[in-house]
Image 1 (cartoon, rainbow, N blue to C red):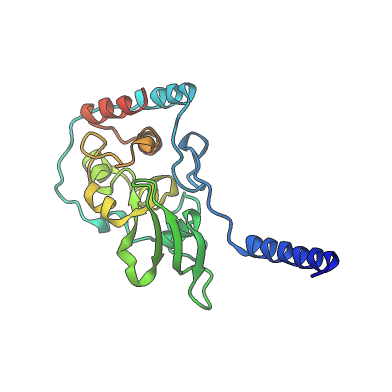
Image 2 (image 1 turned 90 degrees about the vertical axis):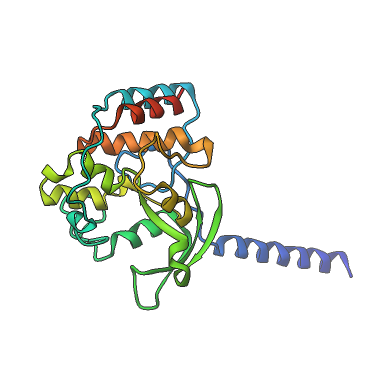
Length: 237
């Protein structure tokens, strides 16, 4: 092979590599909750610096405390239809897509939609913030990725939501600030627990998780138990 031919071949290889690299969907970059007060940025980046941890503790200290109230009367329907697009006061509402699909599209990468739909997500790759696992998800394994309410609906109910207007409960259930796509097993393990009863297995995101919990609680005026507040502060030392 001549030098001229070798250069031509090398140039062709570079072109191919460049084409393959740009054809991929850019990964969703996880955002710190401190820079994501609206909840429209993806994921849950760790809070690492001392200054950011101090800001997180200041937010957590604002939370009111009270004992966990009664569970009487709680049903999922008290917060409206599952993944309703009709919440009156939160991002993504009214865009024609179910809230779950909005959140999968927000946090996933290599997102694919059902043919003919601009909403229905059928596959994606997710870096689960709770466990650190990389999940290659397809809709035929729907439960492998679930959308977690950071402050669980049942927790909100026991802390005052029965007295809220329906519009506020609908916002609470569909607010992207309160929603994270995560590994289904971790979501089921958490159930309706507060931070004193459950924290993400991935320790490095625990301060970010309780900060997100506090952001939602402050926004909706949800008190937390004294044990939960103590546990939250401990994660951001």
